[in-house]
Image (cartoon, rainbow, N blue to C red; front, side):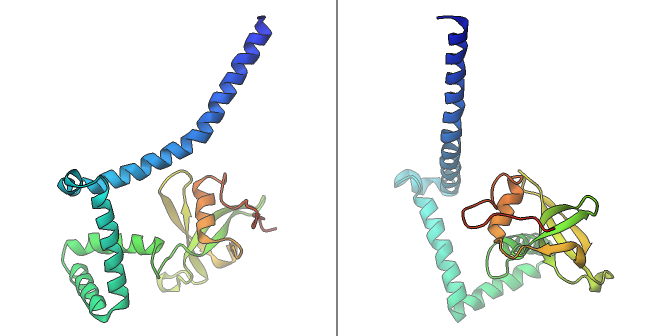
Length: 206
């Protein structure tokens, strides 16, 4: 075997290895994350899972959470109980800051009062025109002295973080044909995924 054939074989093996990594990596990481979440919840009450089956605590937590959500949403008594606890925590010194902060963050992503549901493009420079993707969070800031301004949340790529900017309403464009999930996926992935699909191909405004 000459040097050229040797290098070709090594190159093929290396390409095959990295291709296998691309196939196995996302699958393995997904399984690991799911298992980590299940194990973490099981460790809340480890004796139950140890005496029965692994994952039973996880199932109990999921079923209980679903049941509480259903009762709190569909029945008057459940709604009264939930609202009473909500009022108590929101008016307890020290606790109210933690509770209201967590509540605002969670309701921004899930539930009937989701805030990150209006994807927009914000123009950051005029010439050349450069746009950033974000989410409209407040459509009127006149109460704080910024008439004709809106607030936009700009998520960071590959991070659970972001920042909020005040910008003139004329400098944003609503993304009508893009869902909030697609927009967030596009932003967090650094533009690698999210918009390009069989049903919708992103087109920047002119």
